[in-house]
Image (cartoon, rainbow, N blue to C red; front, side, top):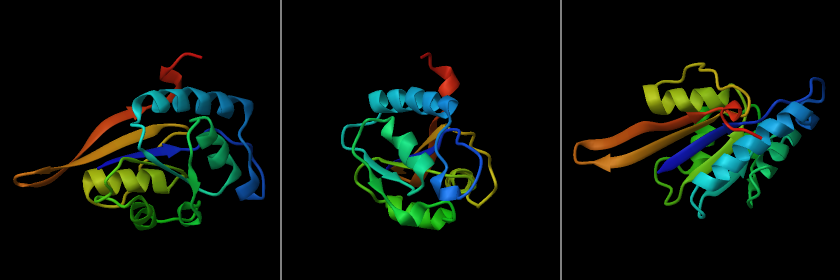
Amino acid sequence: MDLVVWRHAQAEEGMPDHARALTPHGRKQAARMGAWLDRCLPSGCKVLCSPTVRTVQTVEALGRKFKVVDAIGPLATPDDVLKVAGWPDARTPVLVVGHQPWCGQVASLLLAGSVQDWTVKKSNAWWIAQRDREDGNEVYLKAVLAPEFFSE
């Protein structure tokens, strides 16, 4: 299974938290990362998004159908995210668009075996994969990408 964790792009400051929109810079970040992901993700990839305004605006830059899932909001745990994504048994790749700290915590749990407070910067995507081997499952990091790697 492939799981891509995409943190929302830069958002405005303020409250209420769930209504914070992307800044102009954040819209550029989301467009750059969304274009790359759209080129590289398989057509059957399931796309799941937190219900906040900033995550919805981020995933809209992907240009694909997506599902808003309340269970992966800002207060979600890594276990909540993995359950919604169907890790490690989903038959198709899954992209989840969400928040810190759970983006980094999901990555650390899958790659290091424990929940740690790893930093995933705004609009960065971590592509984590799992494959079956004769001696068990292997989890590995396929890519870590930042929007500044891509030109406008």
